[in-house]
Amino acid sequence: MLTPLFDTIIIDTPPVLAAAESRAILQSVDSVVFAVRWNTTLLPVVRAALKRLRDVDVEPVGVVLTMADMRAITRYGIDDVDYSYKAYSNYGYG
Image (cartoon, rainbow, N blue to C red):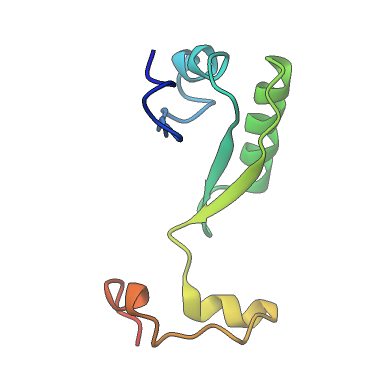
């Protein structure tokens, strides 16, 4: 396998609810980070996907919020976002 060659291997699978092979792949990994699309993925869908993961004994170690609107995040009480950071410039911020 690739494990002896690399410290970290990232496998991007199809959505958990949309494809059964995602759950099959997850049985062979050490940990899972669950990705949720900002302002698009509904909470009941997130709950159903997490339940499906738990059904196959997979507990995510973290969650990634994708496609986040950095300006809208300030409405949630996070007001210390530095939009001058270089990485944000690719997304139209700054």
